[in-house]
Image 1 (cartoon, one colour):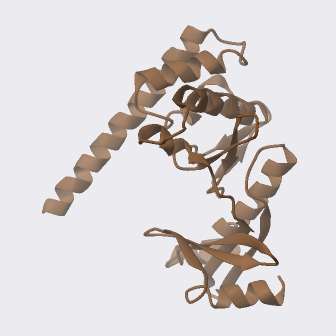
Image 2 (tube, one colour):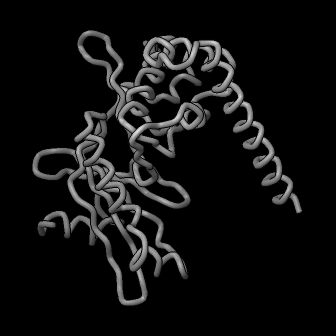
Image 3 (cartoon, helix red, strand yellow):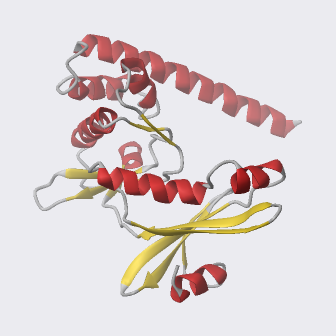
Length: 242
């Protein structure tokens, strides 16, 4: 890592512009060599996790960088990775950072669920279905394949191009089973209409199952996920009241 990046990371809190601030992670935007980059700061792991990320398992920052490189090699869109940085001592990992080029999207996949002028809803759903199929055919199981982790850029021909972010959790397969594919798309929308459109588009490319079989399997995985999500939210609300 060069001195300029090292300086930015060492002054992460006082420099740059906030892009996303969450409970666990923070993303900030910086100028670097005439380009706009973003740096994701991961939550400092506590206790045994700090030791694990130092000596046993790769850090989230390193996995993000390596997974981004694999995606690009496989022809899957993601902001270009630049570097990762880990700060640790003999006890374990402290803070860590993933650095990539900043990509300003025209839409997010979550734009589907809000008022988004210029958005073609059907095109977005079908684009996500085709993109998901491409991931699966290349053996990529993106474990955080949810509504907020796909950026969309519209090209000069009006095509929707997808770019993955939040890359630290992935599995790679030689041949992805059908049920794993359906399970992987379970978070793409709670409405049956969405699942049916995804199934209709996915069936154009995946010929081992009928459209009806794809729709039934996807809807089953979708309903199980959102039922679990509702129970989890209800429990959190109940616990906060006590």
